[in-house]
Image (cartoon, rainbow over all chains, first blue to last red; front, side, top):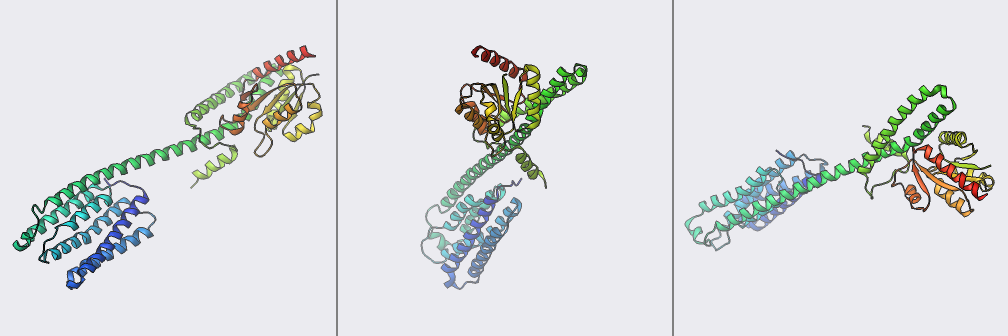
Length: 277
Length: 131
């Protein structure tokens, strides 16, 4: 199940991928343009176009859902796969010794750092680089195979494993950040709630005191009204009970650094405005 | 004759307390809503007959507080007993300041008014001994 994560994470992820695609496409084109190969131009142009579009999209959109961002991320991998394949193919065709599959290894690491929390995109995205390296290895001619170092698939395998571990560690970190953010939001909400309770309580204290005194005055001055004053005092006791409950709520929610309610009416008005659509 | 000073910005509560204290103790009350009214009545307040002062801590945002009135009374050698009343929470700056003053009790509204009557009677007895 795809999870929502903060706007900054989503936008940063897409922006970073966009910049990498833009840069990667440019470097690929610059390195291999002399080959005058249509597929080089295609790969370079597609990577640069997708990179530019992704950057623009990430900068322009205020909100991007996790589903949309993950889908866009997955689509952006296509020029990266294609570019890595083309680069490896052209390097292999040079006829000299080379360190193979570096592009795939670099892309796997980048994916570990940037991939969204949608695990199937992160895991398969990284594994595809290993599969592509292996397929490309199978496509090499005997002459090309002779130019390779010993155990040419060992490095891609190691990099893939490392990338997967890095990816999962990163996801764990994101999860913890999400929990912290959620907890902080809860604390802010409780503080605001406590302040509202405090404002209500502060506002009601003086009238409650006045009613208590007046009920007692009435009872003493007019004993014939004792039945009525007794009812009043019972009602007032309930209000005092409510006051004590609010006191406990306040005491459980207050912290030394919490802001103070200086003006009850203003505080209640603020709370009302915050609630209204 | 001894008197009681009551300072509170809530006029309804002020009248209730005044009527109640007068009924139970027989002592007349000087009621004030603000520092200005206290100053307007200063000759009566500092005349020597006021034995007890009930001061609401918060007299309105931006206005001199009950604590300012207490300091003014102390400065003018007020000999009566002072207590503070407050409807605000402990972390309110004025309430915290009131608690820091030594020898002054701070009561939260709604308080047990009988206790206040008891304290007034005690002060009345002590005052009678000094006269």
